[in-house]
Length: 253
Image (tube, rainbow, N blue to C red):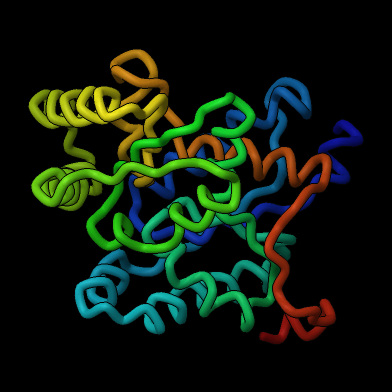
């Protein structure tokens, strides 16, 4: 066992949809070898409630309810020894400000990871693809504005079709050629609008869109978060800190 494996922090994944959570888990494990040697990755635990519970809250606009679901996962992950948390679901990050003050552990927020990567790669104007709940919200708007990045959102008609593909197909593991063609058309249109990269701002979009079939360079939020979490686990780095809580109290939460 390597020294990196022994000292690496334990990653807790707060999951939402099965497809997105599974992609994040696989990506964390696959990313470990670069820093920890063959077959290596940090200890990682995943918890997710029934996806229906999240969808019910989202449909009702109940962000406090979303935050409570996130916290339930956070508390369970803290009890089994996780050191910090990630959530591969972009949409429910809108509830993170409500969850964070009560969280037993710090979080690594997805939009900040994506925006930092955009800056690192020299992008300036980003197209955003995501669910209807996220598209008009502050998660990516705030992260981009803080770094001087422009953000371009889909039209109303495009938003509805993107959301339909995500919720009717991708979360169920259905990957249709016509849906890939729609995303390619949307991303090409964003390029014509001056975007120099596109944010795959839903956990499942990277299952059908990537740099090999996208008209623009992609910012794959799921895999970027997973890689950032591995770096954080091995080397340390920034998270959004929860209020200081003694470890014994965390285990009793």
